Image 1 (cartoon, one colour):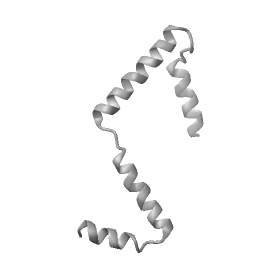
Image 2: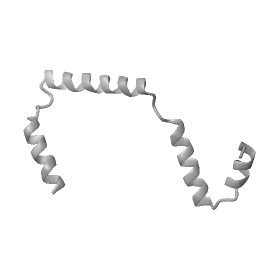
Image 3: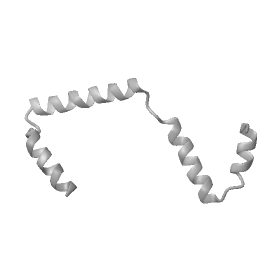
Amino acid sequence: MNLHEIEREALHLSEEERAELAQKLLLSLDTPTEAEIAEDWLVEADRRARELDEGLVEAIPAEEVRRKAMSLLR
């Protein structure tokens, strides 16, 4: 099926179906690359480390986080 055929078929969908298809197509264009994801994680890790160093946030022990997570799963 070529682009013209897909377009013709898509235009026969209901308004709701066209909106859903449009959203899926747009989201497929916004997928970050692995390098972009890695860079975003580095920026976030740097921000969190800086907040800890400046005393803006308080660290939570891993065991406490695990305990809370487990209680939410029950």
